Every structure is written in structure tokens, then in C-alpha cells.
Length: 84
Image 1 (tube, rainbow, N blue to C red):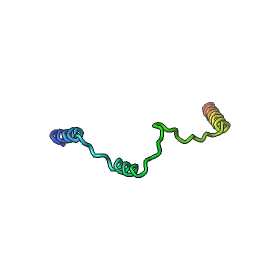
Image 2: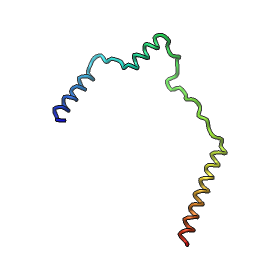
Image 3: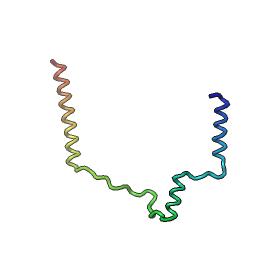
Image 4: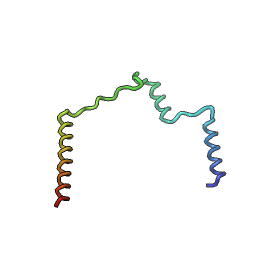
């Protein structure tokens, strides 16, 4: 592309962004039409998400101890292999 094409494209963006009236997107028009017939229930701005199901504390503890044991075994194998 030439510099003239870049300038023309930038000019078109500036011209479009400076328009007084911008048409809403198709989704915005669809929601406006749907909500006109049946408005949504009111909800707080930052509604709490569904509570996250947590694993039992014993399961987390078992995973941590399992990882520690695996690391200890690997270190032991590396040291045993390097000494022989």
C-alpha cells in the first residue's frame, strides 16, 4: 500500500468516528426489541457468580503431599544416578 492509501483509510476512520449519529449494532437492536416486549429482571451491576464448588481440604492436602513426595523421589534418583 502506498502512503496515500494509508492516509485515505485514516481519513475514512476519522470521518466515520466524527459522525453525529451512530447506528446501534444488530445485537443492540435485537436486545432492544426483545426487552421492549419483556424487560429483563433487575440485577446488580456486579452480580455474584455461582458459588465455586471447592474440593475437600483433605484432597488438597493429599495433592500437596503427593507432589512433595514425587519431588523428593526424583531428587533421590538424580543423586543416586550421579554417584554411580
